[in-house]
Amino acid sequence: MTRYQDEDEREQVSWREIDRRRDRSPHAPKEAPTPRERSHKSDWLMKKYRKEADKLFAGKKGTKKYQKALQDLDRCHGTDQFDQAAIDYLDEYGLPDDWRTLGLLLDHSDPQRVIQALEAMRHQYETRAPAEKQGFKAKVDILAMTASNSDLRELAEETLKDL
Image (tube, rainbow, N blue to C red; front, side):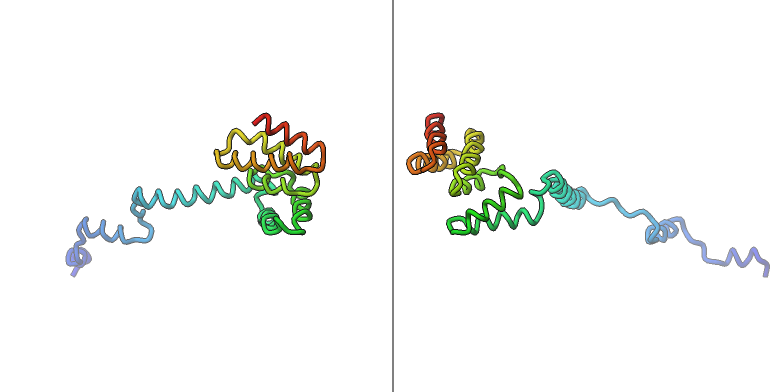
């Protein structure tokens, strides 16, 4: 037998079989993910990316330490420990941006800190929901009646007139 006869007797592989073997290869390109699979993955990645970007731009306020300080402030509200928790928070992070935390600071015993919170809330007043506006007016009304510090009382009265 000659060499050529051996090759002819060998099994002839069809092009279809060659393509099928190529598709099973780990080196062959995989099918593109469906739009639904792609959207779930990209949505998840986008949310994760945004969360990390928000942390980066938030600076100190994007850390777990900030979240703990905020929780301490919440937990201590209405107790003897509130003033110290508020002082620690304000010294570390400054005046908060959010309405709810500013509202907590209106209960602080230091009139200057209350004045700062009150002025910050006045600037945000127009963007708040009606229920929040009503609660703010009630709180300012109480401050106007009960504040022992004359500067705070005057600011509260002026705020009520402006609202």
